[in-house]
Image (cartoon, rainbow, N blue to C red; front, top):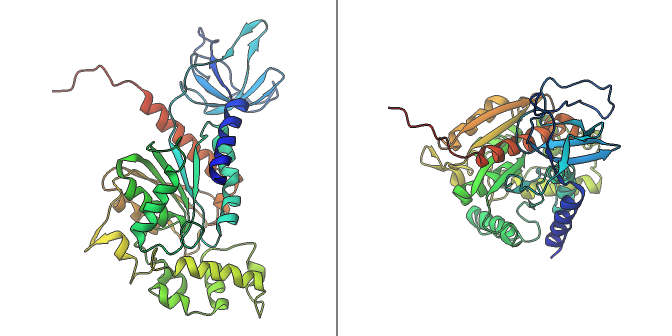
Length: 374
């Protein structure tokens, strides 16, 4: 199938174009010098890249190596020299790097399968360069393979089945990366996978019980959203989540057909009874009485600092902690807008990939030999 074929091409590309190197120099200095650019006169990093560290090649140019660190200590990314005069500082290595999870990626609301995948490609490219050769983009309700889902559990089960279609991914640990409306699907999959899920990265979206329809469109359930006129849906959506592509059409009447099509996608996704997001219907998928249905998975919430009041503010996103079930929660903020946070310039990609690599490195460490404290 197409997405499996594409995956296989990504695997071979990652192995051929991004080999692993080992640091063999700098043993008497605590490692080798790292600079922040290719030029030998570019600024030095404060830390050295430790001897014995494994790094993955991002670029090799004239004896200068751009890398991402997989093991050891020192700057996560930077530029180093592979030789000093005739002495090797790094050599190509056949040592296995830390095992990495499969990435399950959910795109934002308002996108179809085709357009959603296009928006995630820059992130996937960066992830592949760092060694994450196995990634599956998962779709919203109504997209191919996710039509006529009976309920939220059916949708979650289809997401897991899509993950496991590729034998390379079957049964392996999974890290979930989701933005905006995709975080609801991400939450459901994390809960469905249980211990197989290592982390949920929830970007720019309140937790699933947050009454999103109420704040954005002034309605409490999907059926009421479906009845609103397209112009009102667009205006309130732009008030909550500014969008440079759609803003020019805020006051255009009648709306052009392509914009109407986009609003129909929004309505299909946000008014869905399968993935409900209003205060009257969302509790059915994420609470039991007054208690949240927890994922039992560590959650990293990532906030865009320039969210609008009706949107995904830090105060709303802090409530993700209730859904971790004590497995661990942290929240970080990046200086960006709701949609801009998915641009490469926001720093999100490096933040998530570095976090994933750090987790993989920690998982590879042998248990401590220290006796337990009395």
